[in-house]
Image (cartoon, rainbow over all chains, first blue to last red; front, top):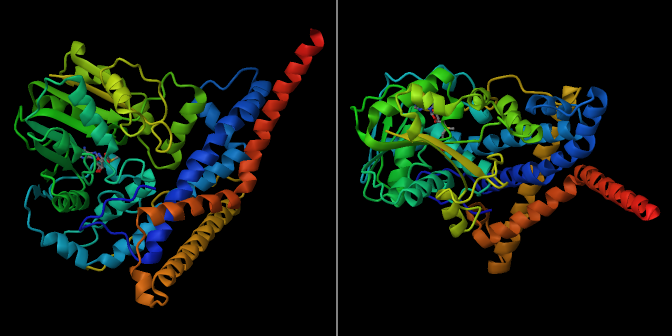
Length: 393
Length: 117
Ligand SMILES: C[S@@+](CC[C@H](N)C(=O)[O-])C[C@H]1O[C@@H](n2cnc3c(N)ncnc32)[C@H](O)[C@@H]1O
């Protein structure tokens, strides 16, 4: 497993804790891929035929496929295991984060910003779609604060995310952001954004690659979760990447009209409600300069997907605490962009694989839409295909 | 607010049970946690062996301070993967039986075809 880049604020824990974390990540990858890929054989050879026999037809969608799979021993065992793996990930990081306090918060508080900045706004309310559940089973979710200037959830997320990705998103857990930034640069080489904003940045792992890909741009990142914004800023400073972090709600930011050339987000939409999403698109429209672009990276939608693949995606909705994933699946993004003020002709939808999963040449062909994408799920460890939705203003 | 931090280990929401008896889900979680502890113990032995190989002696502090480089980590990960495969052999076998069955179908179809020709 590719090791995570160490920085001044990364918490990995003791000798045994670090090994427990590595084991949890390896175990999860094994269950996800080795055992998980067996689900397809079980579905094709056992579950779907049995369904057809008793219903006179094949399962019609993800929901029916899931019900049938969860009636099967293999499906039950896999579900029980992968759910436990997810819990084990967080549990392997939790004690080290707890033990690091209160010194750790103190260290972040005492940080001198050298390349970027951070601004907190306690009046920002965490929307209900964020606060309602512990997304991905992360205890305390993104936003919980247990002490003054708390950063614990940021630290928990940074290490947990790396373990969740099993190193597949690179040592900085930034392949998503890097892939998206590279798609933009390779597809529109003449587009040179001067101000970039990332919405729902969490700890900024997928924000920072924009500083590499567009070194002349000023980079901003916002999130509603204060512990993540504080930690993200400390992390960026430790890595020496200039970025300005703000605690803001993407539905209603305090930036002026037409402030940005490029507005991006990375796997934010599937964690927002429908109205939240519509407000974020309208806000993006307000914040973009004419000629600017917004592009939001997301997991593929299940619409038109075969029942088996839809089952694999739906599973996360129900059991990985992704309550809004299914809302996202039913959202017509093009229509929502028009409603937010964008011209239908300016709508963009790109699907490209992860930068790390194909050769550079192949990646460029996808970026330029010379290769069409074959949709798969966005699970690390499989061929990851990212979908990007957006529009020019 | 105190500066001592306690992250409640359970996340909100009911823990799903996938088996008809939730005790089986609990048992699964216990077995998996145990598998982790065994792996952690193995890594500790591995650290001790590496330190002894290098220095012929060791202290508790040496062990605690030891961190693998990418090479050691890759070695350990290979061992963890083998270990996991052995541990969950029974599940892999269930899948392999299915694949074998599929091959049998192919074989029978071929036989039928040959019988006709
Ligand atoms: C799945 S995470 C995104 C992670 C991050 N972009 C990445 O690529 O790793 C969603 C993040 O969006 C934040 N968020 C959700 N709704 C938001 C909103 N309306 N405004 C700002 N941040 C929001 C959450 O607090 C959370 O940190």
